Image 1 (cartoon, chains in turn red, brown):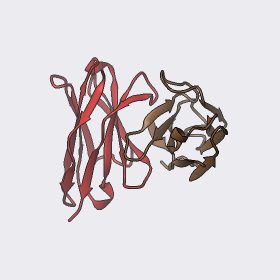
Image 2 (tube, rainbow over the protein chains, first blue to last red):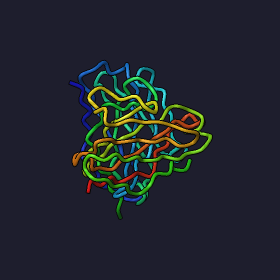
Image 3 (cartoon, chains in turn blue, purple):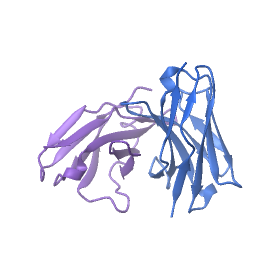
Length: 119
Length: 110
């Protein structure tokens, strides 16, 4: 069965970076795009970007341009998101989600990773 | 990119139908038929309910349906059940080759 399992909660200081992993299983890793989405406490979902796992090509929301990178390890079926220059407004649950075919048909999601930014 | 606009809350009695609107612009909803809807229960990851305006993934009840007119997409839930009580988010592809989510709607079953 398809599963996306994310790394555990993180607490970071302002200005630091965080790297969240999303380990996938149950399907051919390179055949699907992975999206990253976050949700601040009590707030709406916010799209961060996607990575075409097959070739590693990313696309980022303008809101995160220059601060976020995506990577993947095809030997470990894992995708990573790194966010730099953290500030308190980055405190949120970060989700990875698999796109089944195209156009944001996100059929499987990770459990979410809480990133807390606090001094 | 501004968030798509949804009503903060919608409520209905069991068995009734409700509709949630999602208003964007000519640069997103008005331009593309690439609108998705997600259901989110408290403390859980979102669940895909519709994609490409009205396509239901396997396993999603046919009580959920979608439509679009101009810059506004809509999600209709018919035969409302207690389990439908959740937050609902729309999302659309945009001309910037990116996606934007809606502000979210809390559905309450009275």
